[in-house]
Length: 218
Image (cartoon, rainbow, N blue to C red):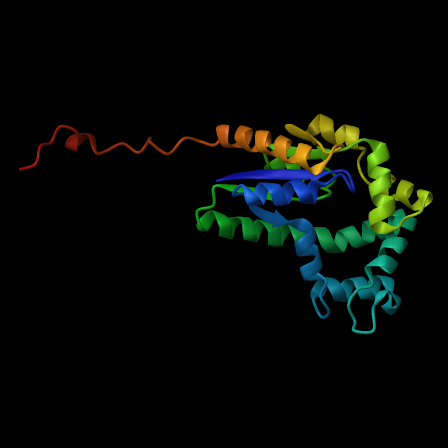
């Protein structure tokens, strides 16, 4: 089984690339999805977050108000680091568990999708690593439209992550998602072919018992 990292800048389109790879047969382990699971009301991570940031970040049903929490952590590096210290060890542990489960099921290609792949050093146990990139104007426009952020908020979000140019330098493959969906599909198709080409060949190293090599049926 090959475990491949997938990351990118915020609003660069890594989730779209992930979905396109899933269509081609890859199994996906999504760090963002795991993050949503572990902060359900009553979970250990949820309790620590409420203890750290107060009940003001909760909806009436006790679920996290992500908009309020996001504003807090992007306004304070200390708050952001506190949240990461709660979340990332749990995300990593559960991701490793799910990757192991997929391996046991015979999965051939597993994509681990994580926004902070490089920042948290996860790329050290994943290869190859794919980075989804786009030009900064496209990135800003997508953030303004998707998350309804001001220019100042957009800049804080960008500053909170490793610069995209640095991620691209660390990547084995870079997908430029500055164009339209059809262009992206073509690029992901080419990427998929490249990934398939580096898979290990079927195991032919298992040799028969040499004592039986020339043995004829009796």
